[in-house]
Image (cartoon, each protein chain N blue to C red):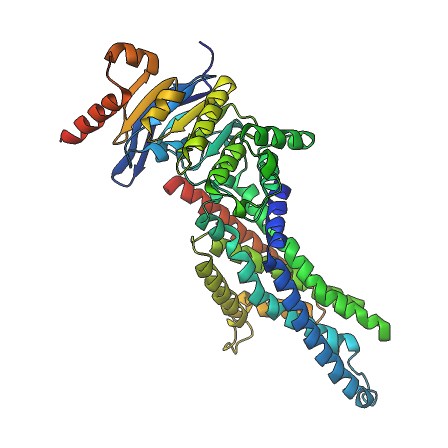
Length: 247
Length: 246
């Protein structure tokens, strides 16, 4: 049943120009960034050979590409997540799902899964670009995969929070703006923090993504993203259930 | 008497101090079409939302085909088909895709989905519209798709909230005969403001006013009891009397 709901969401995404335009715009942006990084690397390459332990092409091209992709996701997810529940509420189609023999958990999980699968497709774009560097040399595959995993976990966290904010309102635009604000807020929350042990560092999405970006797969970061995702999915279910109880 | 397909017992729904539905009880049997009448804001839609699991009752119980809706919502909902006041249609899907989705979500077995969709389309006069996008359909056709999604899984109980609003006279006739036909094997609850519609399609009538059921009878005994007086007179009498009283 979760799969049936997820399929419906994917069908709605790919049936509309929205998904394709998001993919096309992101690909164009990421390709430009990729090209820029590659260009910078090539112009620096002669000088790099003189350093004792020079950074490789993966570090200089792929890692910045993935951190750009993370920022791009931050902008794109609100556009995709805002309609998930708020849009259905506005179009009065939510009742279709609520009257079907589905639990709220199945509905929420299905919607989340549908969005996550789409975001996984988005995350594959920088992955494929990075892997294309194999054409010109060897790569640090571990670093690339760590980045890819980080991007997927980040996408899951964004999707869950976006889904929750979408469940709070009947206006997709409001849900979208709220999501963008929340994502940016969680991205820069530790900006002014000087104390490295501050709790704000723990909350910052960027901080956790940075470890993956450096090639460090830390269970604490994985746990953070998974808990974050699970928490907001649970909130979404609670929110929909309250609506049924409270009207 | 066989088990009722739907039974509501002492349903109450309160919004803060305001009681929208006040101790409503009724039963529906197989093959019956029940007309559910009442002025605007009397609690009709609230009752229907509770019957379909969209809204939790403050008190009372609902059983669908003997399954408690509140304790086993998914099992109970599988026996239900619901057309809300605004048909819930995904505009980006084609009629076929949407009906297949409805069948899948209502647990129609994978191999039977195509047949179920074809049957629902045939019954609702949508045979030629299968490949069309819902966004491009006229209001009458959308209403038909709304009914088709409510019956695609062949539910025991079909709940239709004002199914003929905005249709032209010919379409209304078709929909009414469809409702009669549905009444043959399913149980139907039909909410409407159009009294002749009730007279032409329903076996039984109940009138809700100010959250309370004020009238419950079969149409035939109504005609016997009231002699010449029509359903309209009964309705006006009950509703106006209530409103005149303090």
